[in-house]
Length: 342
Ligand code: DP6
Image (cartoon, rainbow, N blue to C red):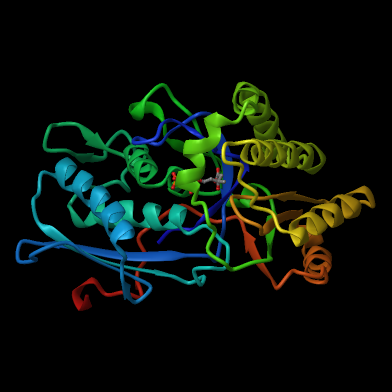
């Protein structure tokens, strides 16, 4: 089981698209209560890999992306069997909450466990690979990253930093503070549930066409440092400024790419203005926006009732979904999908 996550300092653009080595590091929190649950079994009798997502056979592109990760797991574990994969989200797809992070984090853990690797062990006594190497939590985060960049941040719990690294071996995410460190809530303003016309993967490939991308990337260490310190010090005022600045910078890059990407809708901007006005009046709130029109309104625990009321009353906001800080990707006792029934 894995939660999606919301980035405070964003990942946008890769140094290496195939390996998903990011142009800059990023920081996020996991979203509690939103879950992808995935079951995997490998069996010598299966004639091919089969993939079911939310009760339906996966489409060609999703199937290929899942099989690529299964191939990596087979190589790591030294097995050759095909697999059956069954995955379910408890948040409907099309709610505008990115599901690729939780999907590939859950798949990485379920597939490696099913293949006999032991990623839950700590880094110094983890599963031993056929080649004699180790499979630890860093290796699990790296595997998830190669499936979907942001998925590497859903592997550890709480507040998480993904270090850009120098290559595949050191580009993975670690927890910088546990969920209970800071009582933050993400009040997600759902403005549209339409499928976005340009996927994140396509968007990353366009980032370098914006003249603003190099400035955004070069300044990332400063933003990462400020954001991390604000989290560690539970400094909401400092956090709010850097989180909004980072989101605005990413959208400035998107809007100045070739072709330009405009993910906002009119109601997106109305929410942004309302959040800033409320903060001026003393409410501890700020916004951040991913590759879509929906707005993640982050607030201190003390402000959840007032914030969700405010956001829910804005014309154009269809629904407000609340998520506190979530834990790590983990095996669950009673998965809704019994692998032996698939
Ligand atoms: C805007 O991780 O979804 O949400 O690696 O191609 O799957 P792929 O992209 P993805 O990109 C996330 C982009 C973002 C910012 C972020 O989460 O850091």
